[in-house]
Amino acid sequence: MSDYTLDDLSRCRSQIDDLDERILKLLNQRTAVVEEIGRIKEHLHLAVYEPKREDQVFANVLSHNSGPLPPEAVKRIFERIIDEMRTVQKMNMSRGEFEPVKKEPC
Picture 1 (cartoon, rainbow, N blue to C red):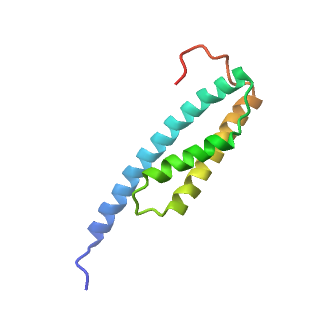
Picture 2 (picture 1 turned 90 degrees about the vertical axis):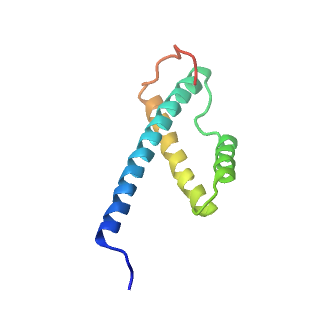
């Protein structure tokens, strides 16, 4: 018989909720930077899709992964994040929502 209680489960779920909120905040911060990158790319007439840069992102996150999340899972998660960020850039560009770069880049 385990010494765990429903309170333990509730505490863990509360931690997950807090972590999810932090992850969401970071994703939105990342999105804001991606939007700035989109403005810069549009200004410079560069393509949204840059496979070499994506490879750099994967290499960076995989080199910093100390587990327990397996490398394959990390790559799949970041593939999804990058895909969504690319979609944001494309949508903003197609709607003409990017204004010329007016401030110092990131």
